[in-house]
Image (tube, rainbow, N blue to C red; front, side, top):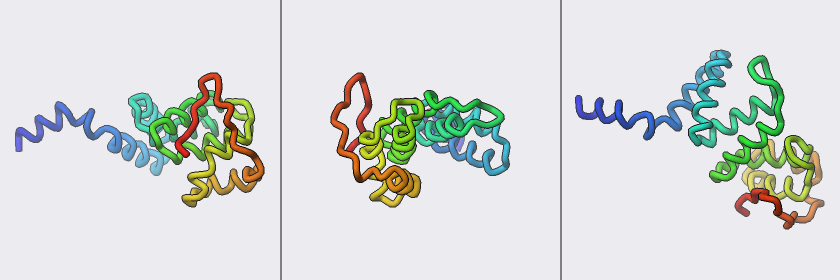
Length: 152
């Protein structure tokens, strides 16, 4: 038993921190302790957890007592999560591309980011797809200047 405790103490933060920090931050959200939740999400996001990156992106997208709205930062965190194949982030990127928030408006890119999750039943992607009539826009193949493209 002592060996396992030592193992968890030494390696626990790197092996288990992804979901543990995220879940702990979610618990603080439920308790309406947003400052503790934000700090945990931010630490976890900066350590590479895509779930926490989406949560931090949402903080910046909506703004609150802790952070001002900052669409550029929100876009940055959503894109980091999407690059890790966390497709729920794609709906937020679609929303931001469709509205020109933190990036130039581009309905073709919005359609690419929304399509997969819309088909999977994600409510945000379905709403973005419908509200902006994304089915009308051709696929944007002009991925230049370092723009990131999701998996299709």
